[in-house]
Length: 303
Length: 210
Image 1 (tube, chains in turn blue, brown):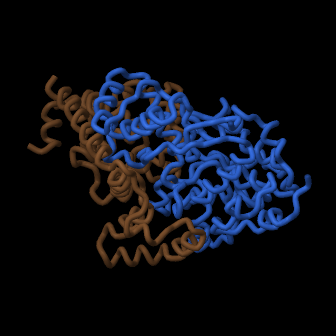
Image 2: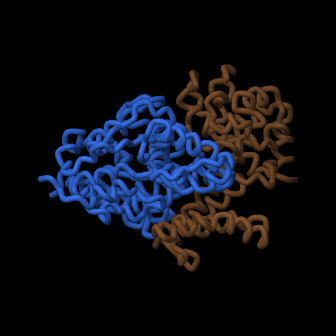
Image 3: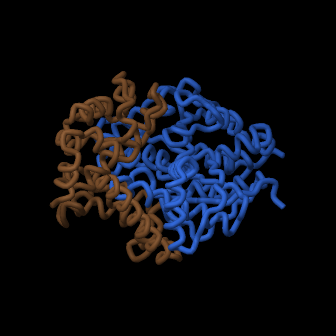
């Protein structure tokens, strides 16, 4: 039996061929090393994300998340639900909070769920993968598996919004959370604690609908990483990752900058530090290639 | 009678009450003490994207400026970063109220028609509820083609390099156009959502009658 077991809510962007498929690949390798067993919630659905608000209303949005709770309870009773995506985590946790606080909303939700042949008896705990790593395993346990430290690599820890606000991770401050820097340190790389854009918003869904507004913010996030001598940026959020990585070319055209900095997931750093291959870490999923990490991943492991 | 005239009639001269009863978390609006921390914490407000930042909207609601608030593009500039929520000294759920006012303006047909984020928001919800899961390719295409075929091609061409990069990295699958990921129990999801809308409409209507 695995040391830690959870019901897993991967979310739409983690699916095969979707924008964060590299996140999922690296999380799977990371969990194998850490003996964490994730069992996918059968037939899970989208959380609705924050941006669905124009049509979602209140109850339909909570019902979407509640369906996942019900499926998790049906197939994996008693297990906590773990999400890797910031928006999935936030959406599900918000629904949990609202349903717990309002009997009317809970009753309405149960009535709607009945139509899909489902019900909720117990409210599950909703965790983000980084919470599992930090709170359930701890930094010492995570560090134990490092066999290929990312020595001398300077990495800006970009926490972003939704893995930070409004719920926070491990009781950290909203203005200057430290956990991502500690994770960078844990894999043997060099964190940048003075990186002042670490909780700046990447623009979220406005990167699609009003790109000039989002790109103005992304520019600040990337520029500050360069100013502090970072070789790459690391983040725990799929939308932060995509937004900060893929628009650098357009930003260069608009602002005359020469941005070309890789944006990684914490799980990718961990897999490489744990001795995994470039493939295990899904380094081929980067639009801006992380050459330095590729080189490290090709090196033999010190055991 | 249009949805707008019905509510305008019911709540005549009491816009605050209208917001309290019809908008998600609207009953928090009166708690605002006009400190302005929300406006100073909003990332898109720094780009002058907000005609009226949150604190101003709250005061306008209390002043009964119904038309100005509901037709404003302001709320649609929310990026859901939750900075205003965590900094508000009164712990007002500002992000949710912004979404709530936007949703309400959309529901009664007063929201600015061509506002891009309004369009995208509706598109996203339809996209993800149709099959239970987001189809990223159809979502992007739907956005580019919102103003018709010719401008769709133009918008799509602007994104060409990004799309190629994503396809090469195996993070965008062109075949999503012909299907893609979906939930098995789509029937159950549709029935469940239909019921949820029925209940929600009934609850809002009851407030109108009361």
